[in-house]
Amino acid sequence: MKDYDFYIVPTPIGNLKDITLRAIEVLNSVDVIACEDIRVTQKLLNHYDIKTRCISYHKFNEKERIDLFLKILSNGEKIALVSDAGTPLFCDPGAVIVKELKRQNYKVTSLPGANAVVTFLSQIPRDREEFIFVGFLPKTKSQIENIIKNHKKNDLVFYDSPNRILNTLEIVKTSRPNTKVGIGRELSKIYEEVVIDSTENVIEYFKNNPIKGEIVGIIFKEKQTENDIDIEDKIDILKSKGFKAKDISIILSELYELNKNDVYKKCIN
Image 1 (cartoon, rainbow, N blue to C red):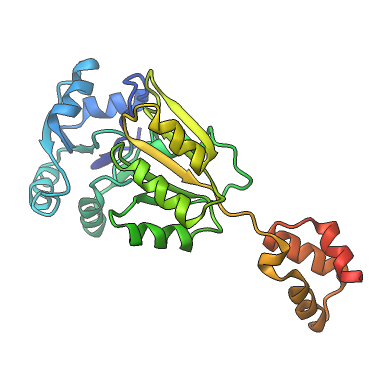
Image 2 (image 1 turned 180 degrees about the vertical axis):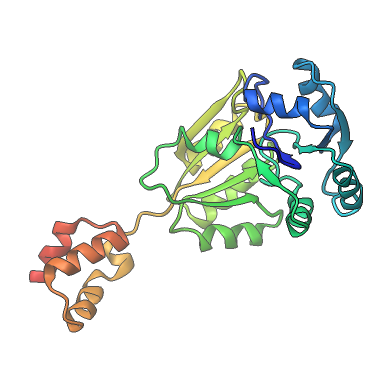
């Protein structure tokens, strides 16, 4: 196995069995584990009988830890970075130290492993692969509204907390009343739940069912209609540029997810 100075190691998002053999090997072999909350990480380490020393590393001490980590590495020791759950640097601390280590040419690598967004999306039926991930939504209504409206042409994926999700869904319902949403909670745990429905129905569901655990959500993109994009105007523009009906039907159907035959009929009529 290639030798690195600094390892970014994903940890389970709920079920302690969701850790890779390589992650266990690395956590056992390094000299120091940098973690958000030592108490949380220690539960995982105890479960796998890992005795490696831990040092706290969180968003409030990221910069001040740089000198300490550089000193450890300069002594020839190895460091693994973990977060409380999931993959570090993914809405979790780590970017500050990784940037500095790469600047100083230390060898950094990341292990594959648990991630809430990937776990969630792998069980969500979607028309296309593309999506926008915005991390945790901001706190103010106007900021959330702007994000929702600015990304209405894409599936929008986000994190949220149990005490905020109903308020977030109410904002979604007001901003985009006809959209569909998906909400996942307690992923990989015994009470895992994924609900996909209209925003209104999801709100009603969670009003009647307690919400616990971290939330991953998706606001599905708006379905565009021919009226939304003024298809006839687009056809006229392309015709004026010398495009034939067959080419126009292919271009517009791909760009706006329209039926190619319907566009072709409009072109020749």
